[in-house]
Image (cartoon, rainbow, N blue to C red; front, side, top):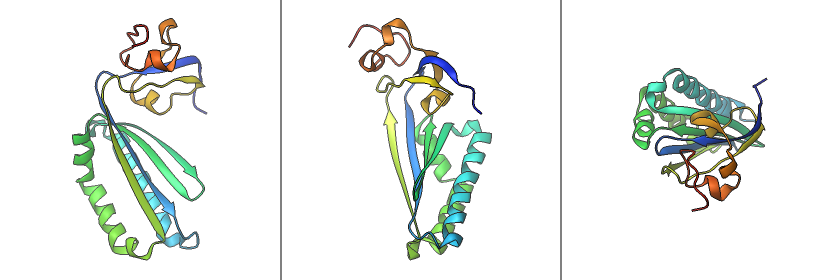
Length: 164
């Protein structure tokens, strides 16, 4: 079990970053031979990224909601994310999906990319293990002057002024 950090925490980032949400939807449960390879490929890419921090990959969270498997990833920059997308494992996986799965509709895939400028985010974690952006950035206790969402927003480096 992950270590629970007692109390309230937020995240400090030293520069802008990218949030990349990627996932798959199982459209036909009985087409196991179609969706298991997609799921395994997603897992293989996360393992590869975790083992190679020089790619710019910071962290990821995996979740499942019914038919949908989603991975929220945090990256140092869009250029690094794009470079990985053009790399060997991802291109091989994408090519295989397009040749063997895409046309029959058994599995859907999606992704969304967001560039987040320094200070244009806020987060809070209460009695949680390091999670999400808390794993990607500097996980810090919420100070007295960062008690509200508004006071954390715009103060990405933890130097909270009063509300901006």
